[in-house]
Image 1 (cartoon, rainbow, N blue to C red):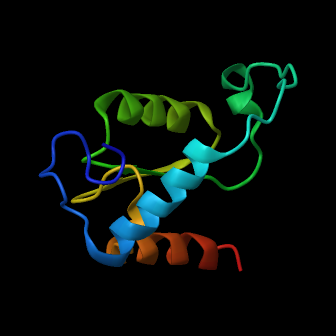
Image 2 (image 1 turned 120 degrees about the vertical axis):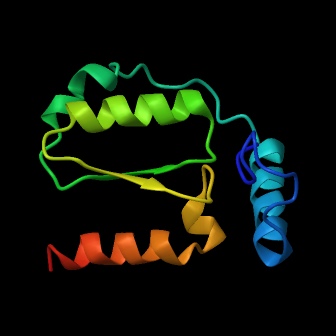
Length: 112
């Protein structure tokens, strides 16, 4: 679901990227229980306090609920830039999508 996207063809992403995803996922699933988690205040109400440049990129093949949450976050974070990415799901940077990587590079370069 996270790599291919819930509505995309299964195994849309393959090769070394798929192998890396499976390796990373296996590590996460086999990791030791980190123990009790610290109580943290909810982050959502504080999104309006973000004072750094923010780029929110949404893969059009990602879960619809995730897309909706990301759009809301972009509307709350002051000055956030929102970008929709065609043909990718939740992990476009892992897919090595050229359009994704170009947008990230342009965004970072605009502050250099």
